[in-house]
Length: 134
Image (cartoon, rainbow, N blue to C red; front, side, top):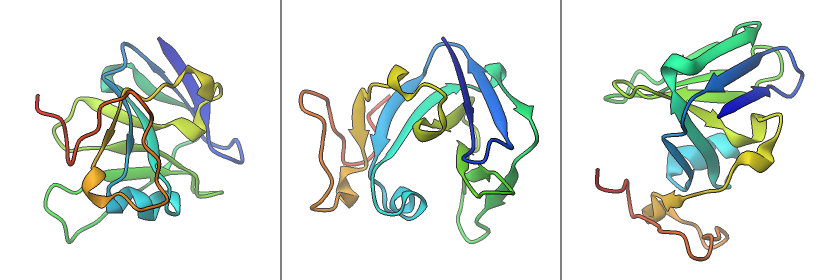
């Protein structure tokens, strides 16, 4: 599979190739901050197949958390593009930045322990209080 995407203003572009490792929605509290309250729709793609094709993002990593993720976003418009998790050989792509978001179908919902009353779970898909067992 090949996915291409960009930020809102089009300054930063990326492409990712490979077999998706996970396609899900995350309801964790951190993702709620990042999305403005809704679920974070994402697809994890192999890091080896990921590259920026136009411009470069800014990065942010919280200093007060153990094993904090790095979030990458457009320095111009602020669109959150990807997340990188220490030790995980995947790049977490934000579905809203895909050129064609219709390629995404969530396989599951994670971190339902932080679910708000206004969040909806996809019917017929597994959900997990935290992460699924490996």
